[in-house]
Image (cartoon, rainbow, N blue to C red; front, side):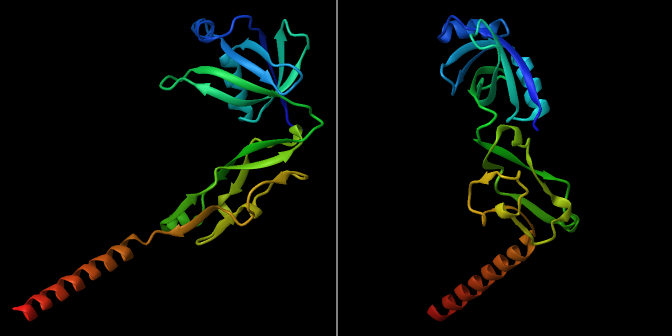
Length: 213
């Protein structure tokens, strides 16, 4: 069962760019909860939210207690977070209220763990798909879907169908889609072929010039 983190907040009375800017100056983070019967505007501490996400990942389940709310506690997921364009500062956060007994669709990061032995031979690792969309109960959402790279051999390709996903989870995406591959880089051979092609072209041009003269 996924651990549920706790986050506190208070109802936000004022809305709009001006009030939100003043909240951020004072160290607050304006947010909204939707998905339930009502949309709730509130204020929380961005540092507390950052600590939760750093510990439990982007799909962390959060019990949100808001001072002034008619509901003592709401279980939510972070759906969207807006950051400042050039400062490491939160601007706004949207949360989705969930029911722990109902399945939900989320995107889970795909993480490469360890290194393939083929890398020591100069092989290149290409990571094509960085997250996987699944649908499952909130308590079954993994922090990440890991690919054990230590068992991946040279010229091997890992597809979506090869990933280890939670039991009873519905996976979206073509099972044949390549997620990661390990292969040698043939730069030297390609360069040699290009040089050989250039020499042949130069020889042919010289012969044509002699014929015309």
